[in-house]
Length: 395
Ligand SMILES: [Zn+2]
Image (cartoon, rainbow, N blue to C red; front, side, top):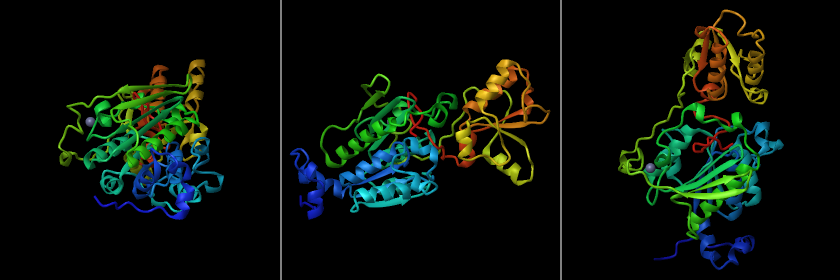
């Protein structure tokens, strides 16, 4: 077979000297990296170290998918960005840092949500996909598109102090749906904004994702196909478990051409006792000039990152304290008007509504915004979530 890999330039021979000196790596692996391409879905906590290390390592072409802009709350962990790029698109911010590390890398920016309409075209253009997503709907889209296209999917998930990593390649092993056929109920899937994440954690897992991508592109080592790494940051424990392919998997047991991409909806297992409203219904109400009472029960940092117009901030911990003390409720709950309650993803708002009803509040006056602010801002736009058993966040 003729060698069609690109040659290394004199500057690349200097730059990658520490790679080339390793006999297991050498020029052959470096040239495969140069010929290779990786799509990073998410330029957040996981995407930051991944983007930087893959650019530094000499991957020839790197695509970045992220519709978000850099916010101050990102900088605790999203180290591809900085104060100088606050408010700029994350793909622009990350690309600038990557080019500074390695001006030879080709960077393709995709400032969009990954959707069922664009996933196949986007993912189809790259050799390896890195899942650095922050929400389950996108995670399932990445999985299903990779299975359909026969692409390896380097998965990472982080939440609080815990991390997970695997390589899903349905041609040789299980896919994400073999483990988790459908998204967990919202209550079991807190994201990083709700549950928190140690800032360095996505650095650990993202760096390992970059390692796996390099192994896949170069063919060195043994990728984590059919295994999952479980990382406990508090004990500094690394465990790995074997993953089996599910012969009845709703995705990878199908013939590839029969896999249809669809956006999963996150639902509550225990619906709150009051009514619910969707983001689209709320938007239509507001557009029609209605002014329903809106209560945001997130924390002030989340509030600072964007709100639904007209909402009042009543953080859940404050409401919990008031209810526990048996004190009278503040507006907007003091009157007899219906209140739309929302949090980031629907977990805390449902809990607040349950607590209010338990305290004697009329359930008919409490309306939960399905999917919370994330659904309002865009169905796939959560600022900070990812996996687990099921961990949810990637931050
Ligand atoms: Zn599967």
